[in-house]
Length: 349
Image (cartoon, rainbow, N blue to C red; front, side, top):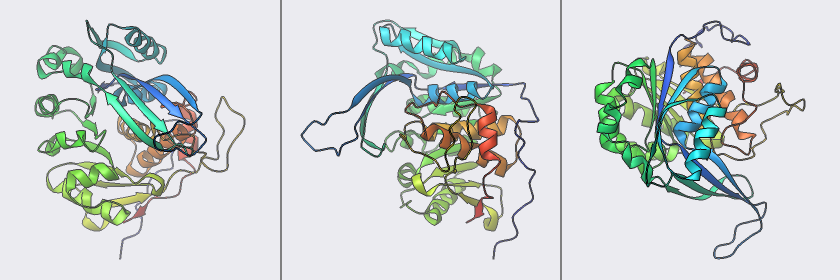
């Protein structure tokens, strides 16, 4: 039998602690080319729909969210010397992201990610063209040591090559390193580096690949997290999509090691929208995982307790799901705290 839920402080509508440090986000800055339709997709045939170009990339999306939540945020990435690169830099600056560490590489096409959404808003297929990120080598990272040394926390996505991920984990293990698995292909790059990861955010498919076992239910996600803790990963969030997500820490008692939290119900109005919803209205899933990670970083920087942090992460994802963009332009600290404060207590697994 599980013990009683631990006591925790109620989440204020605004954070009490104001971080003095900064977050350095390292990884993909690319253009999202998003195709969507309200009709069923048919193999080998076209359907009417809409195509939009938007700034994206896991690292850039996280940096955008953190800046919207009033954290000092710098992005370390590369863009090509093309018009897409110019648009990406402008979008970052408009989002109040410090782009000092975003370098323009001559003769290289900016990274892009093409995704097709089905009638429900879920991703039906996607292709990424991230060759530009090959320039983010260990040598390149070393040339950016000034930015790295000034950061209070690092957020890294697995779009980086394995040797670059290893260089960061081995040389900056004294900093809290938050990592996004990105995809089933790229998450394999973390094998052998788990002991230097402070917080790992992955989805069920990525967890299954990383742990070589099925991960379809909260109980299976807990088992995967235990595998990751056994090789040194400190904190693990595994997203199960519509089921919610699990969260666990390596230093907790086995009976209290894992939490399961259901998707947030969004019943609050934003400062920019006077129409509230009784529940989350999913427009598309792009960026929801990035928002989860953003909430974890926010909670850490504000020294929130575990349950407060999980509620913040859940609220960030719920707000993002309501937007056609990977970053909801209405995301704000006040709205996130309002939604987070209404969430039920996470359940033990």
